[in-house]
Length: 315
Image (cartoon, rainbow, N blue to C red; front, side, top):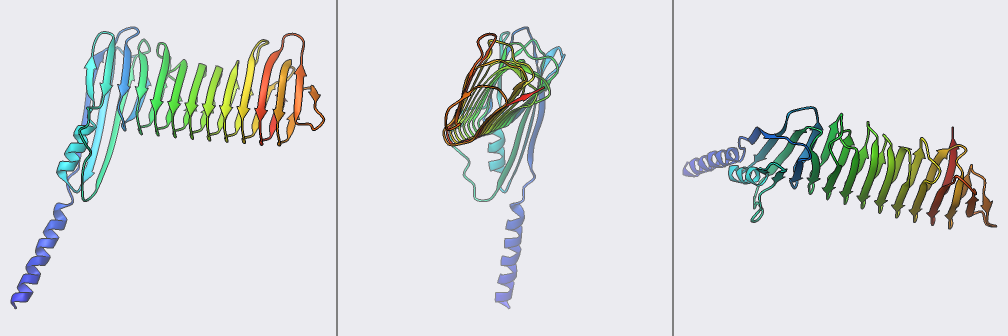
């Protein structure tokens, strides 16, 4: 009988211990407002926080923080909240938002799930510089902010659907995607991420390693370099004197230029196939074609090693 009682007591104790592992989630939702001024810099360095910025015709800068931590340890959840609560430092010239310095990780036997997001509403007169580690960056809006938008992230994705006139985006394994509104200039540098431009740009400079590059509705110079990724680019218009430079190793290259464009330069592939709608002089193997328009020409330098290369004309 005593053994039964002990077993029952142990069962109750185990059940109560299991229950204590399920904690009420800790959450933070707060908004702060800061004065805006022409050419004021909004600078973010926020680690793993996801960032969403909306450019709107508003009188001030508004920052809204949403944190949600669920853990088997309330202490671990509280430490996670503290580690992901940014510090705001405001002056007349700059609003700086950064995560506090960490003095070690969170040791936990159990589980910890966290969600962290920072929403900003910024007037067009301000400037933007955004940096994260694994956090995604989303930018949208009507009128673009002042100056060049600079976004740097490690494994986070960068998505721009308005709000920028000129964009410099650098990421390691994240993707870069631009939609809705055309850019005056795009500069994108990524390692294994893809670069996609759907809304067009006056000029573009893109460099990726194993990621693919897809650019649409271009209207000027292009310099694109890829290692094993494919490169696809099309132009709405391309004035005389413009430059098209595309180099890749094992990726395919597909270019679509306005019909009637005068070309000077060459397109070549080492072991892939070469097709062109534009007249030029081919070598004996058919792996290189030289364009030699004498005047009003667009300079082209398109090369791939083992990939196929196509230069098409469209109306």
